[in-house]
Image (cartoon, rainbow, N blue to C red; front, top):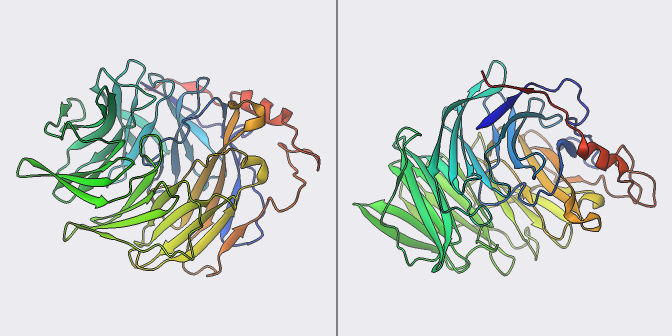
Length: 443
């Protein structure tokens, strides 16, 4: 059951330090999100095909993070475009190593939340949003399933289907391999497993998507990707990609929607991006275009986003270069142009794997968050946190790619850094150990 919090007025940990970019105007802000400071958080942003960031109609940002054993599954909110963050809610029944998925309903007033709980089940919570004060409250909560869930391997996703029903998809490890499961509910309280999925089909990840006449599922394994739909009470499996996503459970893919269309980007085992487009009018999938001249030779992860004008954005990591690259398409992926190159300061890019995320939908300014930890300080057992960028994507801004290069020199300065010779982590550790919000019980 979630606990809700009053806004923090002291401002110590919730202020993200702004760093100046070499390219003014496109990078609105960047810096450490101090409200996300924690330890032992290997599943802070896992998994990649799930969504953890939404933007409500008032422009406020909301981000669901697994902040490890000391802080748990936590919903952060920002009212000032990611400059400061406060804790909006924490979910006490979440499993220690849970992943989560959140999604706004079409009216923007309700947040659908799903995660693995500490009794080996999956919990659903529906949160109502009060735009007057930016607060969330529980409308309903229930268990989708009450047994058999391993939080280490299960990655649930949720959507409100085209008919108004709620659908949750999740994967389960069995003695015959990883299988996909679907459950549906008409009221958010009573859940029924949707039967008939091929019990022999290998899957790693299952992402449920809304369609005009109901829903479909993206059924991914390391070898291929299927689009699964229910037609005339029969499951139809359409192979849409011969190369499956990388990742232990084939989770390195991301989706966004524009109207009834779905856009999917996936990273394959050869570190290349596959881009696919589902046309909601014709109900067909087709290959999109990702120019080789734009995408680096080694990509480990990718995120898809769409703005309110229907433009789509693909954010990927140029692994060898150590940057995050944002490209933009105004023609449904037929052509792409550079939008930004985000240079994470070297202190925060030491982790051998890139964890980063963007919201599925946003207005004009795109939030990109990147998780960091320090291999020399016990890896995930030591300090973990988030570094953020806000990119101005307004068409009236400069057409030249933005380059955030705060890390260009060897010297770092500020409360988390000390001198040319290296980082002084004492301030960082102190920040990570503080508690900065006051709990208030839900009325």
